Image (cartoon, rainbow, N blue to C red; front, side):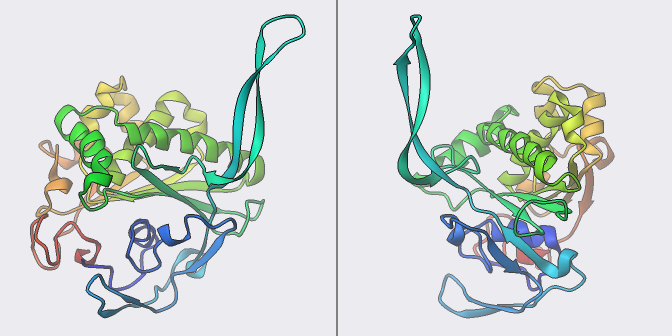
Length: 300
């Protein structure tokens, strides 16, 4: 595992934090009932998978001095029942049953994990930047088959609108509605790595296709080590004009030694979705090497 050596880029920080066993990782706070302050300006000591102590240097020149607030994703558990109506028929009524459960940012069955981060503890008129961070594939296992088969393989083989992207699109719609109501001066930025880039790109493009007005609330979409989604967007019914317009807010950072980064990138970069920047990894390694993989964050 190769982590970032410093926290100098907010989007890289957020994308890395979406994974388990990373510095300042978000999943450890997934069941919090209130916001969690995260400070990327501070040096961070942590233990690697092998138990060794490691170090990430605090970032400089970061938005909001490197401070963000990871928002909770717990909602009240409810139960819906059919109740007879006085004039015949039935209506659905929902009642709280006690306890909490994960909200729409997480769908365990679909393998979908995302995190909503803000620059203020709560949404208000002072909120300027918010972020939706989408986690990529976890390590291959029986528990993560939805990542690898239902989404990764599904995209790679068929260029289809993948299930996790549909869930991410619902999150975008919901969060933009909340921003419009509670934080009208805020933008919603999106970031992700690996599978998270395909999910994010499809979700953002679908938002533009369905509601160009809501799309105006999107700020920047910054994606690392991800495939080109152009053909999948065409398969979703988007026109070339729509794809180009949606891509104006999207920036990719990819490298030529990473199979995921290079997937579908057979046309010139300027013809692909978004703006594509190529970064050669530090150690020039391939995707599947066990040490310092070119697909990992530290190679940036």
